[in-house]
Image (cartoon, rainbow, N blue to C red; front, side, top):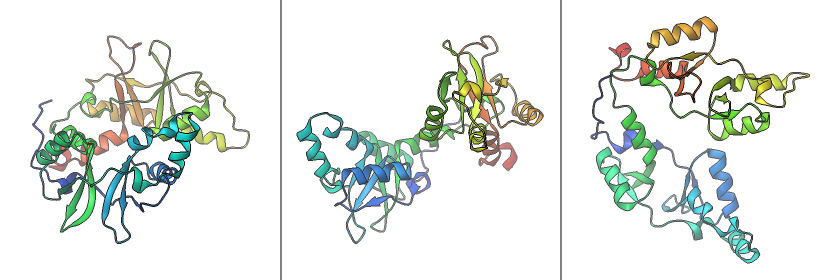
Length: 274
């Protein structure tokens, strides 16, 4: 695969998460935590009644709180604290037409994880370190094999992991599947969200992922996307475990799914987009 450099001229508006999750300054820290969890975000914009951003409350701010301690006095202080009191202010902003290079430099200089994107004096979104990392991942324009599109960050568990713990891991990691491995990392099976649906059926019961997992279908990182697609279609599965052919009993290298291949087909500049 030939790598091309990231497009540093991409604009902040093209990278940002549009739509801000806001909260009033008077809500409690517990309510702020509930909002973060409900919307699956890492930060809230604390806004005035008219919508003016006043500050940011992040999950890191909450973790730094004294509520994690066992000190009663410290806990009482945190229970009484509001988002407005805990927030980081002022909000660090960047114009919507700023480039990715400018956004990266600002994040690095300020040593922060996110910038509020503004246009015509109004906050319209957030650009984060993760957005810039994703932009780097799109730099490759020639993707010919499994290694080029596979997900390298996989969620694994042991065979004796309980079903509730597996479901929690899938939910928290936003993963549609878990790769079950032994103590040495050898892939033993795969459990998907679809597999867990069987527990809703009358009489459906399972204690551990070993009761639900399917044998893993494996593929080498150098295999073509056509080979991966054919294997998925032949076995009617949506994902394959990527392993090193020289060490198939070692920890998997990643996962390749139907979504990975479709995303590659839809990517600008891909073979399928002309």
